Image (cartoon, rainbow, N blue to C red; front, side, top):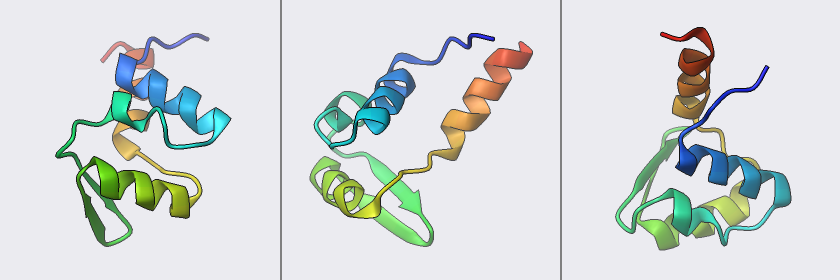
Amino acid sequence: MSVDLPTSIAIYIAAENHGGTGALAECFVEDAIVRDEGQTIKNLVAIKRWKANAGSLRISFAQREAQRTADGN
């Protein structure tokens, strides 16, 4: 089954599969906020630093969006 993801999510997943943080600028705005395991990471520079140290970033909204698209709801 193929799922049409929002562009920023598709870019993020492709970047995640290839490693690195370069494509994060295409996924997040400069003043983005990421919340992960009790942490709040603010702005693109901090997000890139966090991602480089974090391993695999889990974005729960991406999973919900993909599920909603797949279900048609």
